Image (spheres, rainbow, N blue to C red):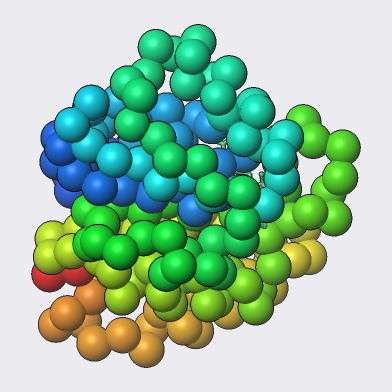
Length: 184
Ligand SMILES: C[S@@+](CC[C@H](N)C(=O)[O-])C[C@H]1O[C@@H](n2cnc3c(N)ncnc32)[C@H](O)[C@@H]1O
C-alpha cells in the first residue's frame, strides 16, 4: 500500500534543489525540518516556524541526533507572519497542521484563519517549479475545518500557474491527507 508520508517526501524531493531555500511552517518535533535541512544541504537555507518554544527545543534535539547541517533559522512566531521573515523565493514549504505530537496542550493547534493567511502568503513566495505541501488531520474538529477551508481556497487558483493535487484515502475519511501545491 502507498505510504502517504513517503509520497509526501517524493513530491518534495522532486522540487528541492541542493543550495535552495525552503521552509517548515510547523516545526513541531522537527522531523520535517530535518528532512528539509538534509535535502538542501549546507549551502541551503531552512526557515522553521512554530509558536511554541518547546517545539524549537525538540527540533534542535532532532537535528542534532540526525546530524543535520547547520542551515536552519528558528522562528518562534506564527507562520501567518512569514512574510516578515522570508524575503526570497522558496523551492519548498511544508505545513504539517495540528498540534505538537506528544505535547501537553492540544489547544495550541493550527487554526483556520491563520492557516489560510499563511498558505496564501506562502504561495506568493513560491519560486517557479516549486511546492507547498500541506498535511491535514481531519480526525479532530479544527483539522476538519482546515481541510474544508483549504479545499475551497485551493480550487480558486489558476491551474496554468498553480497546480493543486489532493491525496486522500477515500474509504478512510478521517485519516490524514495532503495537498501538493505546485508552481509551473
Ligand atoms: C503536527 S505538528 C508538526 C509536526 C512536525 N512537522 C514534526 O515533524 O514533528 C503542528 C505544529 O504546528 C504548531 N503551530 C500551531 N499553530 C501555529 C502557527 N500559527 N504558526 C506556526 N506553528 C504553529 C504547533 O505548535 C505544532 O508544533
